[in-house]
Image 1 (cartoon, helix red, strand yellow):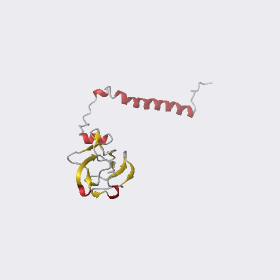
Image 2 (cartoon, one colour; image 1 turned 180 degrees about the horizontal axis):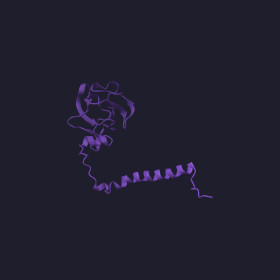
Image 3 (cartoon, one colour; image 1 turned 90 degrees about the vertical axis):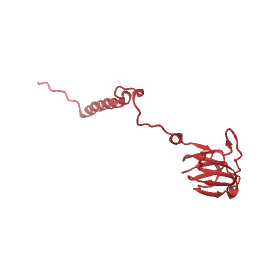
Image 4 (cartoon, one colour; image 1 turned 60 degrees about the horizontal axis):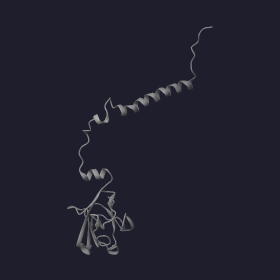
Length: 160
């Protein structure tokens, strides 16, 4: 009787082939660690450029700040844009959770705004802190006397 080479059944051949593929995938995954024998510290990130504060803050989740020389929205203490004012800037998806707090103290604009001038963006204003309570609805650029919300606004959120 002649020696006959033992051949594995097809399901075992597939299993053996899949082990080879797993090993190959594992090698591909290890490429991220090796990086052609360079550590991450040795790699050059020349494609990443310096970002200004506003762009960096937007990329990392947003920013708001008060009383800049070029505000997005201005709150006025009196109707028809008179009296004391408070300027606010915010990136889309962010805002001021309490317009009454400034520089670690109370500014007095909590429940004191009577008119608003929106210069950029679309905003929603709320009667309570942290963007809660009754909302004005989304307002775009323009001049607004607050009417029913006179002396009631506490927080401001930039939608767009």
